[in-house]
Length: 243
Ligand code: 3SL
Ligand code: MG
Image (cartoon, rainbow, N blue to C red; front, side, top):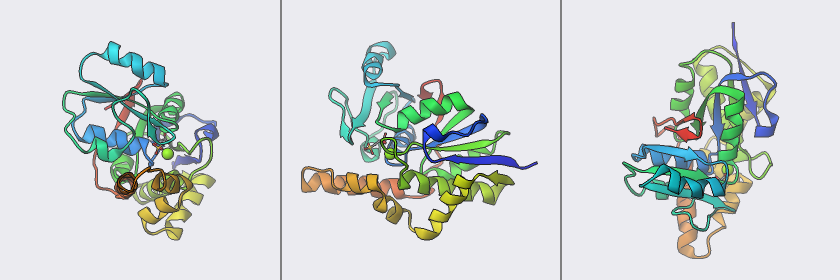
């Protein structure tokens, strides 16, 4: 019997049936950044539910903790890092735990954990690997787009379409209407970078810098997030920890 393949365009639009495996997407930039920290040696990435909990984790988790996250795309005051995947790629994090809290992505992962037995973090960089990993378990599959500030966002929906394409290529699934809609985005934007650049959040990031250097960094961040299938690292959420 075919398994259900559901896309939720927002975390508030989860299907009524619980899923075996959920894949959470915040391609710009939280799930890309978390994946990159782990790829560069981090022992674990904790998704704190809020900023205060992230600060508290610095004491409770112990040494070698780094806080990372943003509000409005800008590093949270008192955090060590913002939400840039290129900053995550800039050094080896072996021996470090990274505690993240972001505007949309970390909350979406917390909601997903109540909806599915297993939660994976997906982005364009790990999309084929994430689909293959999800297929290691039985049950229905739910793809959850974090969205941007409560709005459906093209960047996440495009990434969902890539995952839907992978699942339909690899197995027998009954896609819901949102899954079919996101698949159609791949025809409209054959180039992932063009899709991210066309999105409202992509545009916001591309214009967020105060200086020419900041703008160049943000453009590189968006380009990094658009690289498709370059990573085999698929973070799996265990309570608040992805590893
Ligand atoms: O949670 C989020 O949506 C963030 O990833 C937003 S930002 O790209 O850092 O602005
Ligand atoms: Mg986002």
